[in-house]
Image (cartoon, rainbow, N blue to C red; front, side, top):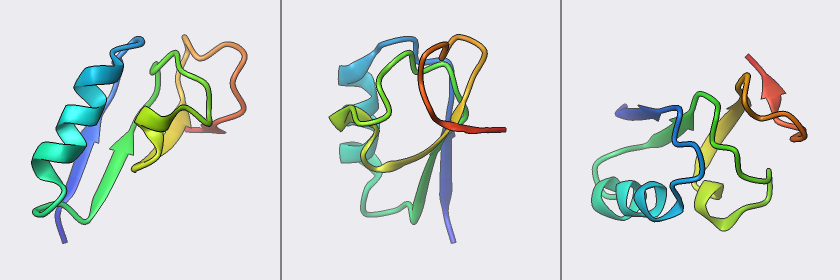
Length: 64
């Protein structure tokens, strides 16, 4: 099983989408460890399991 982990993207939507596109055929699970600063329903986070970071103030992500 291959897992790709990112964090602290701070609103970088294009980069999150590019990571998934580039690695979707070689990774089983994508994890975002917080500070995306995006809404929980944002399309750039669809492929990721997401936890709440210290900069995700108003979001309802799972807490790490």
